[in-house]
Image 1 (cartoon, rainbow, N blue to C red):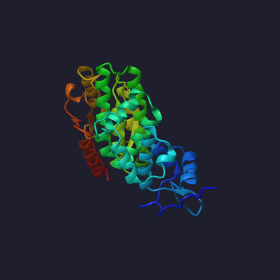
Image 2: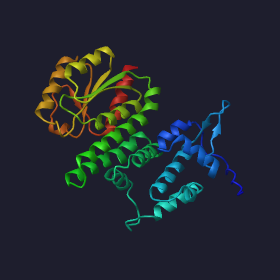
Image 3: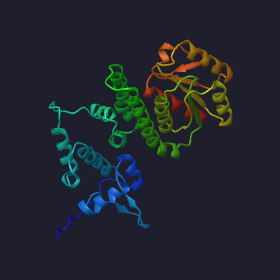
Image 4: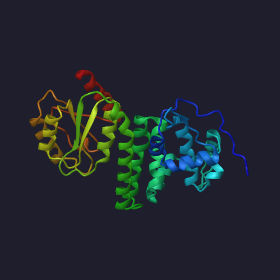
Length: 308
């Protein structure tokens, strides 16, 4: 019988992630992680007194690269035992299109085109764990969303692919948001889209920004009547209201709904509106336009500071 290799020095960095959290961040099942530990001596968790496993972010980064290598056709026996630097070298040297560097957003778009749910989810969650939430939105979700839209416009993909991507991305954003939302102690912020608006991805992006800034997002969802937004503001004693407007519903109709909302909600309560459709909507006075995710993050933090 071949002797198993012993773990090499344990996991660098603090071990604080449960096996369930690691599974969500990498797309690899808990059962698979346990099998790899026994078979390949990685990942080796720390143990709580209760016996529960705890993993580090270094483990997550390495598992992400392992998952990507397997998605490219390598067998687990070939890659699980590789070091993080070895995996990095393997992935950088290997480009099936012969162009050297492989654009990570292009890899994600390829998962969308082939509707590879597990690979897309694992890659996006691992990117979020590596870069942090705001950079993840700016460098991954936003450009990938643009690429998906461009591919649809060129008829390279169909509406089913666009819906597939939106569903996967929204699930990823909810997963990334959850730990921030649990620890948020600031006031509530109501988030919604206006009547007729069916695009919810921008709303989930803003919800993540809100939770990272320390406020507690209350997401009403898409196609929400103005009266329901106003009722939610009263019920939850919210500090502010955030509205997402896409290009699909931008224009006079969205402006009318925003005017109705502003007339319903007292002036001291901020109504913030963002999204790709804002510039075509020309929001009414008293509605604050937010350009970009970092501006949204900074503005929401101001709301929290005023409330505390």
